[in-house]
Amino acid sequence: MTNLVARLDLPEAHTRALAALLEYIPPAEFLWALTGSAGLRLQGVDVPVHDLDIQTEEKTVYLIEQRLAGSMKTAVQLWESPGMRSLDGKAEVEGIEIELLANIAHKMPDGTWRTYTDFFRLVWVDMHGLRVPTFLLEDELEAYEAMGRSEKAALIRKTLASLFNS
Image (cartoon, rainbow, N blue to C red; front, side, top):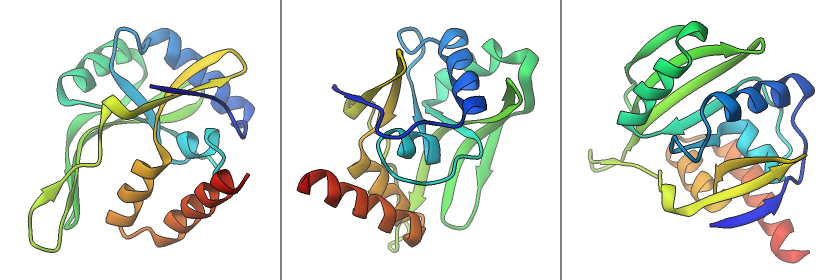
């Protein structure tokens, strides 16, 4: 496990929501990672943050859903598109939308499904005393490329290059 200090801050409202999540679903009890734009931003990718994405595995997503029962807006359910599938639910904490995700898989050109989720490769980011689990930028890059989100992948690649050159 790697530890680092947050390279960019989250908006104040998102920081409050994240602090509440860390209290409601402590990572020491529930295996999860902050992913999406918030996880990227903490690691230095300069992207806007609209919501908080929490990624976990199947058993834990339902435990988190129970823990956030009073805040749930959409129950956890199977979501599928032609190129991706996952378990997905939505909550609202401190006025911020929280997306609960599990079992994310991307469809490969040969028709097989692949996941980029590896909880053994978590990066712990310290943000103003909050210890936040995130995924390695290299893993996020692979996932964004698999989703065909080339603009965000390019931003991650640029951030990685600047980190290695500094």
